[in-house]
Structure formats: C-alpha cells, structure tokens
Image 1 (cartoon, rainbow, N blue to C red):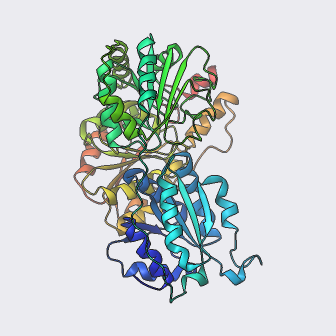
Image 2: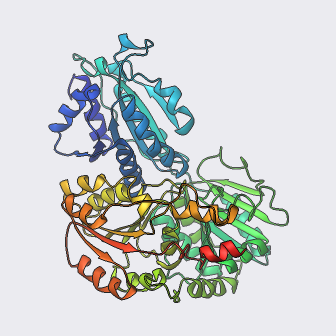
Image 3: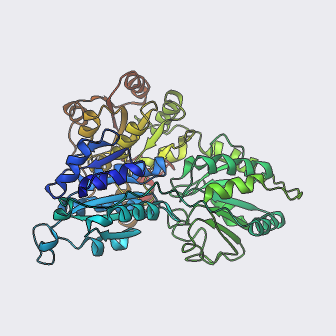
Length: 550
C-alpha cells in the first residue's frame, strides 16, 4: 500500500476490481495518471472528448454491473462529461466520475476552470462530493462503489483537489471489495403476488431496468413460461429476456406493436420488475397512467424510494431483480396457474418483427433481413438516439446478454463510445453501432480511440441528411415547413478511412448484403455508409408524405 494520495486512490480502485478507466487527461490530476501508468491491472483508455469518456464508462457499467470509471479535468472537461452522468442516472447504470479540481487554497475565487461540482452534479447523480482530505480516500471510494451499485444503480461524482493528490505520508488502509446488497423478496409478498396473478384474467409483465442481469433474465423467463405470462420489455431493455422465449411479447417505447399496446391497456394486472415505468415506456404516462384505474399493479424494484413515487402501487416489493426472479422461478405453493396469452402475444410479436418490403431504393426493412441473416445472433447492438434506431428495436432479435447498449434517456452520440467500450469488454463478440448521420457526428471522434486500442466494431451509418426524428415532429406540427433539420454531411467513407478504418458506400438494397459480408470479413473499425431517403421516416412505415396529408 502506498502512502501517496494518488497512488492510494489507484490502490482503492484496484481493490474494488476496477480493470479499466476512461479519460481525457488534464493537468489537474497528473498524479493519478502517473499512478495508473504503473498499474498493469488497470487499463487506461485515452479518449478524444469527455462526453465520449462518460458514455464509455456508462456502457461499461451496464455490461459489468460494477461502476464504469471515468477521469476528466475541471471546468470544460467536467461540463462536457455531464451528458454521460445524466445518461447513467436516467438509465440506472453504475458509474463513478472523478474530476480533477482546483487546489483547496484556490477555491471560491472563481479560479481557472473552477466549478462547484457537488452543486453542479448533485441533481443528476446519486451522490456528488469532494475529497478534501487524502486520508479519507479509502472511505470515499468505498462509499462511491456502494452508492453506485446499491438500490437503483447510478452515477457518483467525486472531485479531487489538485493539491490533495500530491500529498504523501498518508496513513490509511484500503477498504475491501464492496459487494452489491442482494435483497430477496419477502415470502409473504411472493405469496400475495402469486395470489393476485392467480385471480387475474389478463395479466402482463413488463421487465428490464435497474440491476437486471443474466440471472434475472434466465429465472424470470422460466417463471413466466411456466404460467404462460406474456412478457414485454421496457424501452431499450430488449435483452432482458431471450427473444426465443415462447412468452416474449415485444418491447414498449417509441413505435411499439399496436397489438402489444392493446394488451397493456386490456391487462387487469401488471407485474413490473426492474422498470421505473418512465415516460418512454408508458408513452408519456398515458399507456399506463399513474393511477392505472382498473389495473392492479405489482411493482418490484430494488430501491424503496422509487416504489409509490409516481405510480399508485397495489403490491410494492423492494427486492433485487436477480433475487426476485430466482425466488419467483422456484416458488411452488401447489397452486396451478396457466394462461394462453403468453403464446398468443409471442406470435403477435413474431409477426410484428418480421420485415416486409417498402419499395425504397435502399429499403431499411430488407437491410434488417440481411442483418439478421449475417450478423451473429449474440451481437451487441450499440446505438444512440434517432429514428434509425427504430428499425433495430422492431426487427433485431436480441439473443445475447448483454445485447443492447442504448440510452433510455435518448442521448445522441452514445452509440460509438458504447461500441468502443463493448469491443474492449467483449473482444470475441460482434459489436455493431447503428447510427444516424446526425447521431454519428456527435461523437465520431471516438473512432480514433477505437483504432488506437484495436477495437473491432462495425458502424452502420444511415444518412438521410437530416435530423430525422425532429423532422418527423416538425412535419407533424408544421407540415412542409422545414426548419433547422437539414444537414450537409462529409464523405463518411473518407472520414472512416482518415481515422484508420475501412468503409464503403451503400446506395441500394442489393448492395447492402454484399457490403455487410465484406465488412464482417475484416477486422478493426468498419463503416457502411448507407444513403437513405428522408421519406422513409420510421420503422412503423411512416413517411413524410403521409404526415403532410394528415
């Protein structure tokens, strides 16, 4: 154990199992960078913009269940990084952001790049603090890990005064590995839940979210399949259950299957596990209203502060999703419960997720047929925000876990950094980053990071020369009055090549399959530049012309 502050901090990270940190270096935390240089068990990934840093850390936390770790400098670095903190909070993903801060003697003078970080980040994270005393580093690091992984997972922000990091002669013990509290459900609550389900005529489950991992995926599927319970996934939580499950009913969010929407409305009981029932999943709190008149709500969530916060809950169960799913799977009180709805809902989803033809020169529905034919079933799909993602949400089947890295808060630019993190975490799996042209250019610079660290990743870029989602809203509210949504784009193939990757241009449906096969036969960063028509507005078949006629 070192008696130097920065080395002590790195010792504490190592003790918590940290094996990778993401950073844009800054002079405010040079001692930490120097200590990391000598720590062979922790890889330091140098990125090109702080938003990319925190997106990567957020995605890493989503994959491992342990906090992704990021280091940035004060002022501009920290404010750039705030987007990833916001995503980690709204997506309930564990992350720790360390910020090099002004020296303690400089504080409160509005010194160079000074920001009150606890005040700035407090509203968008679980805990924000400053480590002013080096001997308390082990305490703060242990608390940061405990806070990030306990209850509803989320981000923690710790500011590191520059002069504190230079201190030596410190006597402090590194604290041991912090384990996630795994609270099982109360047996009485499970008995009450099964009684309510047994009395229901049309129950439905909505799953995926805070603390949902492989254990929950397997056990909940077995539980639901045993009783024939239809299972929908919350917005961008589609890998929460295997698509081969005979009770999987599809996903909620933007552009869901109308038959699934009808099932949710007709359900007399909703079993919600791990999901917060946020705005996207509930279509603006309208599909499922906070009072949900005529519906019984059983809400299972790992944080008591979320239960009954927005929704009137008939049975609130505070439990870890993994532990709850296992307990439900093993529950046997002799009662016989069986529904036909699970199989019916699954058949409806299979039909909904089967692409037809649209007739466009580059038909994105047919492209998805090729993607499903050629890409490995356990590919990790990493996307940011935009209408382009709708084709993947509707038509891709998320077989792997983790299989979907996508921001539920709708942050653009997430996909490329997430794909870098996924490629480093799972070098033997196929990593795919679908992106729109507007979405891609939010963080295209992180292709340099991907190339620098030998990341294998495929970018499928859909270019309609517009901010397509906003154009859709615009055409609905102001038909034909295009304002601020048209884009002039670079040569994306040349851009990929400039970064050291490979790229090719795709203009027709017939070109997509061979181009994808070519890309899959290569290593490193690969990019398919797909030229699409803005008329092909969304995966639900919506077009600009149809919106204008309405």
